[in-house]
Image 1 (cartoon, helix red, strand yellow):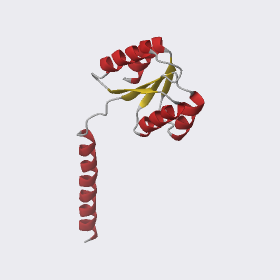
Image 2 (spheres, rainbow, N blue to C red; image 1 turned 180 degrees about the horizontal axis):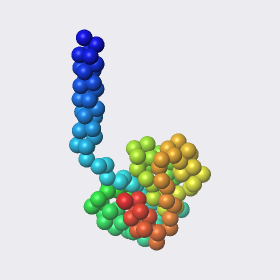
Image 3 (tube, helix red, strand yellow; image 1 turned 45 degrees about the horizontal axis):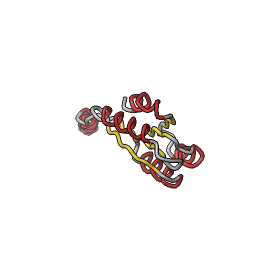
Length: 130
């Protein structure tokens, strides 16, 4: 009787483990996700917006990319916090680190931040899209 119970318990355990393994195999990989945040609180930066638009469009083939333009420090914090909470990495142009990066990085330590100038956007987006 004990041997029959032990055999049954092992069979149930083996089926349970197999179910978890098969379920994990069937899940598609999650593509990299990133947001490019261009701040214009100091004035319009057409070069940065154009570079960001081109980089995000090019990177969307294998990743989920977004572009956001902010006009105040409060918007910077709102956007970086929103996307970090959703698992996006952040490429920032003109962001205030003390307001929009440091508090968000403390709350979401797995979020990667790249603060660059307009010329560094393509390389930073390429790295975030991998």
